Amino acid sequence: MPILRATDLTKVYRRGASEVRAVDGISLDVEAGEFMAIMGRSGSGKTTLLDLIGCLLRPTSGSLEIDGGSVIGASDGELATIRRERIGFVFQEFNLIPTLTAIENVMLPLRYGPRRPDGRGEARALLALVGLEQREGHRPTELSGGEQQRVAIARALVNEPAVILADEPTGELDSATSGRLLETLRALNRDRGVTTVIVTHDAGIAGRTDRVVRLSDGRIVADERHDAPGFRAALGGDPVSNGGPRVRARPGGLLERARGR
Ligand code: ADP
Ligand code: MG
Image 1 (cartoon, rainbow, N blue to C red):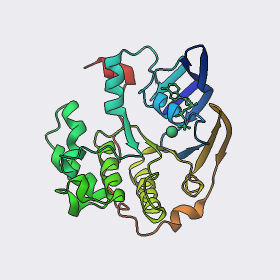
Image 2 (tube, rainbow, N blue to C red):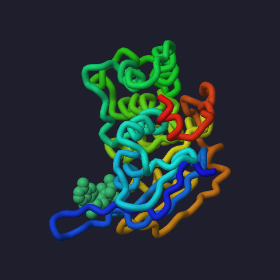
Image 3 (tube, protein in one colour):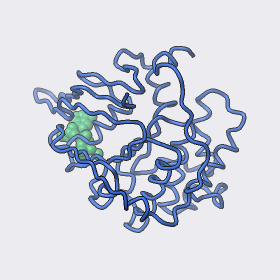
Image 4 (cartoon, protein in one colour):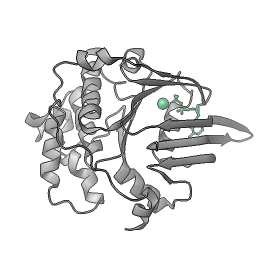
């Protein structure tokens, strides 16, 4: 069963008399453990699709299942629970809290979830996993762009999400830093089984994933799988190759769990 299943997903924005079909009937399955990219020109609907999948937006029509459970009938509170517990977001602008240290930023999502007495230890382990064990007391202004995005990735992982959704995560980074960031995401995917969907218009980044979905005018125009057995072997020197425990499987349906609180 796919971890994400969109069926005929559509988002229409109305502006006065005109309407924009930002996402126009997209059907897409993402299997657990996939490492994939969504490409397309500016305005092709990439962010809208990612925000629909991440339950930040409600679709105009169509259906969306996460972990086998439909999210279409969910209340706002249930959607918030799904976002918090099952989705890890990474944005182009990092979106760290400037007054908090790296480790405090990573721990932030724990404030809104179930109590985790091991929170600080887990945050520290995640910072080590992204290669920042020496930076936990630094504030965002004391970190490079690449380091800030690593903090954001650690923060996205702290609630053990089913999927990481990253919208142009390397958009603000130079190409060498982008390459290292992609290696980190890849290693998390390989070692912890984190399903990862990366929106990018960098063909170099997309070409290093396993699957590239291309959008144009809100529709999928190509869906290619890159079978590159040499790719993983070619990834050397990543900081997370002996990572921590794999993401725990959580029994029960998504909405049932959200409602069970
Ligand atoms: P991309 O991320 O590929 O650049 P977006 O998903 O941001 O594309 O936008 C897709 C289309 O939807 C564009 O035509 C954009 O102008 C339009 N759009 C996006 N967000 C809104 C909004 N909140 N209101 C109206 N139109 C929007
Ligand atoms: Mg966008």
